[in-house]
Image (spheres, rainbow, N blue to C red):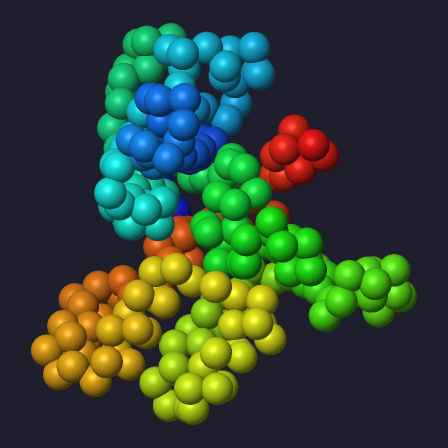
Length: 247
């Protein structure tokens, strides 16, 4: 059987164009306390830094002063998944012909709090917490010099996804104490799922019915959308933002 992509291309040249996804909270005012909004941008990952930084190579995707980074990502993730699995027809001026273009997210750029939210990990502003790449964590600051601290293993994105779903099961079936302790034990925090957990805990039948309906309509809708982004590894595809980390 032919490669499925050959069938989709229908004789066209296939071009793979990975992108760099970027998000940050920005404001038009000096103080970010007012008019704060979340924005998404992307650029072609194959461009050299000198070209990537040019305004005409930075493509605006979405912005909102009410929706959070994960809420905005829901539609973006769906559209990128379509580009990954289906591609789209474009015109290559160099080849002077139609081509089939496919893309994937090479990496997600952002500051440490943004990476934490996207990868379901606690805000790294608290130095005793783990972050998206490894599971380093201690109960006390003095324990950071211990051997056990530095020997902890790197995170795996598959484990993060599995534990995120496990937290939902714990919230539905276990005690309130277990529900509060599990995120700390796992080093996992899904800001989207937390909202649904709180609604479920109200025991409001209307809210529970709506959650059940959402789950049937779209798989993974009650979780961080980046968990379903094809080809994305939150542990390896979120390079550290050096400036603020060292400062």
